[in-house]
Length: 425
Image 1 (spheres, helix red, strand yellow):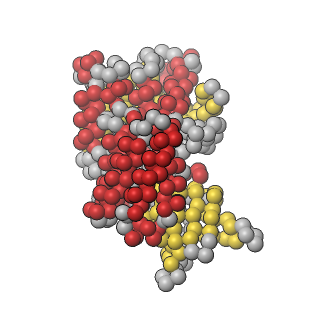
Image 2 (cartoon, helix red, strand yellow):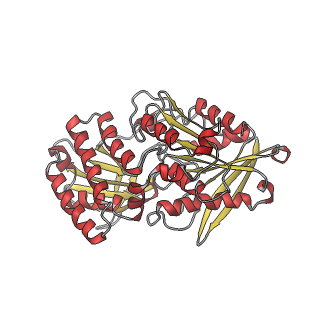
Image 3 (cartoon, helix red, strand yellow):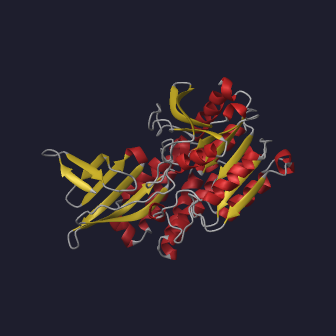
């Protein structure tokens, strides 16, 4: 992180994270002993306190409902070589088309890739990719990895077309990401499916959706609405409920990161309590109950946590994350409500070392929730692939921070499973 004084009272803050590339911060606040900033493009917030004794800034960073301790040390910066061997490189053995997808007042920037023999395929198979939590571009760029580009490239080389798009308010897409709800994101996915349906080249194609993490929730909602979707792939997605996944991950993530059992349980209780409060229909009462609950939880937090953030910033951060229409819809989401309405083949894949979406419970949730027609289709299945994390990387530590350390972007075994499954449809 580089902090540069841009004037008498103006500071420009830039984060040098090789995996995310350098971008300017917004909403930067600096005092004699603290610093906070928001990295708007990636939905990252940070609040930390400066320690004079060891010249560090210790605090908590959060993104997409996840939070973790981050300590900045004063040091001489050196370049880090990041290897991403799976990232596609030209020449590309498929057609590439850049399009705009209309969804009411929102226009989504998107890329369609189709195999060279697309016109000879009967039917051609096409997949719309739906990204997970946080503002994502069409490549699903995270920690230097571009998993959606890797998926699209692999599918196209194997005769399957793909459409991937920038989330609303991100990249070349208009609209507001921060104000969007689950229903809005699902409607964007539906608009992409409709865009393909209305193109003469794809009129007779089999069109499916592959949703990753929260994107799988969007995919379920979109597929349950109509008959335009021919198949569904759920990648590390929610087969139980939004509440269950959020609460479970908020124990597993800090625990895997090395926090104590007591700290992990405190974090789990924090999110469980917030989810309970979000069930209150009256918004004024809900806000009051959340405020009192957060005061109580903060008072029982560890000294380490209190040193990283004030009660004011803690309450602001939690309210911004969950006390909004998106948070309400996420907490109340139940996969079974949508699965029972979907009659097409479904492939659900979870990574066995995923700490963001617990694999066993959610894989079982999909299998149990399949509609009678989906369950009766021998192609429908829910599987868990061992030693893969939330991004489907072969991992050792099973931590969030390991995502950027690993060279693998998306496990080839899972790419093969997806490809072969689509081919038999």
